Length: 298
Image (tube, rainbow, N blue to C red; front, side):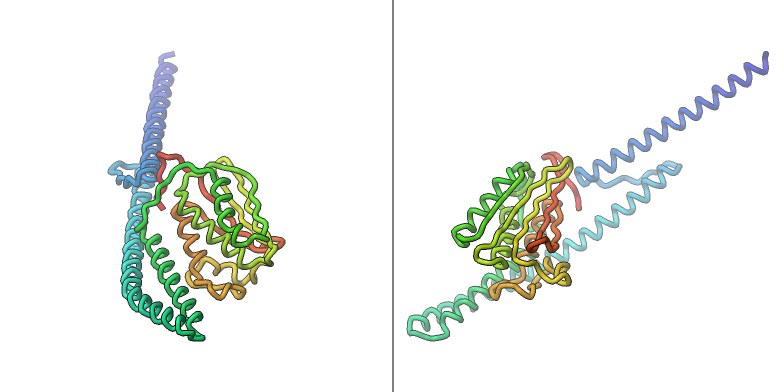
């Protein structure tokens, strides 16, 4: 009987030790999860652990990975800021000669010059190109402040359509679905306008542009599709590249509109993809649902 109680006590001690070890492991795991959540929400660096064990090793490996990611992000940001500064300098240097050229072209137009109108269009395109390039680089360098607030995505889409209806009175603009999205309304409106403008330029006079909004549990998906026949499959991966122009692009295109759209969507932590639909080009914008207190560090 004596040995029985000794064995029982030893077993109880072992079980208690295992329970304590499991509880410590649980607490360490919970602490690591809280530290990761703090990084995702607020950008708080993950601290290194001086303890022993697999959890501590895992925490240190994750902390090292985060430190490397932050360093690469800082390097990338420095490059983008330099590019934005360079674009701003170029823009500033071009303003004066472009203004002078415009003045002389307007004088020539007043004197009946046959080429003045063409020259003015080229100057306007150059001015637009410089302005859009500067905007793109500033967005990439985080030089603009985005004011995020809940917005009615259906209403925003309808406003964008309303701006194009007078320009393309024969086209059909349709929107379905609804969702609230935390976004910068003005910037997202510009992103949608770039897509709709592109669709209007690549559809027949009586063509159609349709928007469909899907309100999911964790994301909001906005699909914009036209009936312009789409683009060659080989060109789809390049549509969002800077200065890229599809084979059927408008002569006045700068090749920057969709690149700007991609950067704006990225600032909303979203993605935009292009594919050929049944009748034309289909662009899909996917945004995660983010509350007012949550910040995601990309």
